[in-house]
Image (tube, rainbow, N blue to C red):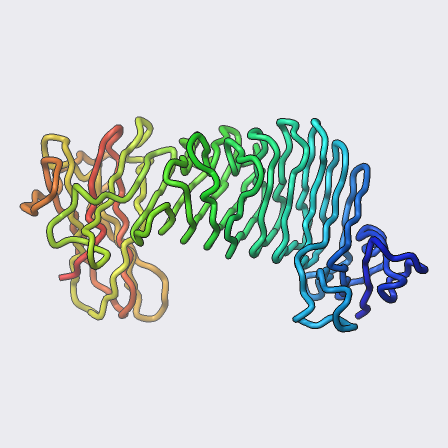
Length: 432
C-alpha cells in the first residue's frame, strides 16, 4: 500500500513522492491512489478551486483510503504526534463538493462555495462509506438552498459543520453517525438543522454532540410529508434551552425522533419521543410518590396523543426494562398511570405490552398484553388504582401476567391509543 504527499505549496514534479514533489490538490492525489493507500496532507495545505470538485476514493470497506493532515515539518513518514487539523480545501463560486468511494479523512477543513448562490456538499459513497475525524464541513455560499447531503453511510467524529444562511440544512437520505463533537455548529444557524429527503429513508444517530448553538427559533429535526422511514436518535447531546427539538412528524412512517438524556441543563432523565401519533417528554410535577426517580428527582412521562391516535395506530412509549429471575411460574408486570379523562381508561385506550423469554429452548421473544382481545371486542375499564400523584385526577394500573421460561430482561411498553389525550406514566415496572 503506497504513501503519497499532498501540499499546495509544492513546486517539484507533482508525483506525490515527497513533500517537495507533492500533489498540489486532493483531486490529483485521488486520481493516483489505490485502495488502502495513505495521503498525507500538509498542515499548511490551502488549495482553492473555482468550480465543482469530486473526490472519488479507490478505497474499499476492507481497505479504505486514509487522508491525514500532518505537520509538514515533522517525521517522514509522519507519526501520530504529527497529526494536525488545519489543512483547507476550498471551492469558490456556486459549487458542489462531492465525496464518493470509501475513505477516512482526518483533520481537514472543506468549504464549498463563497458566493451568493447555492453551495452543496454531497456525501454519497454508494456501496461504501465515508468517515471524517477532526474535520469541518462548511457550506460557504449564502444562497438559501445550500445543504450538506447525507447519502449511503457517513461517520463524523469530532467534526463540525458550518452554514451561511438560515435556509441551509443537512438533508438526510442515508445513514449518519455523529459523535464526540463540541461546538458542533458554526456560522449561521439553519432554521431546520436536519431535513428528511422526499421518498428516501435514513438514520441519524448523534451521541455526545454539542448542538447548543441552535437556539430560539431553530428546530433540530424538520418534518417532510413525502419522506419515508427516517429515524433520528440523539443521545447525551447538549442542546439550547430554547431550541425546538422536532417539528410534528407528518405521517406514521415519515420520521421518528428520540432524544435521550439530551438537553440544556444538568439533568440525567430528559426524554423526548416524537411521532405523528404523539409526543412524550419527561415530567417532574405530576409524578407518583414512590415511583421512578433518578435517585434525587421523582420523574414521570407525559404523553400527549394526537387526533390520529387510535386502537389500530397507538403511540408506543419507550421500553421500560426490568430483570426477571423467575422461571416456570406466573409473573405479573405492573405499570402505574394517571390521566384527566374522568374515569379509568379502557383497555383499547391504553394498555401494557410485555416482551419476555417464554421459550426455554430459544431466545425467541414472547408477548402478552392487557389490551382488549381483538379489533372487534368491546373495550373494558383498566384497573383503578389508589396511588398518590402530584396532579391530574384518575389513576390506574396496567398489569400483565405471563410465565417466563428463562431468566432475562423483561421489556414493558405502554401503548396510548386515546386520541387527543394526556397520560402520565410512571416509568417503573414492578414484577410480582
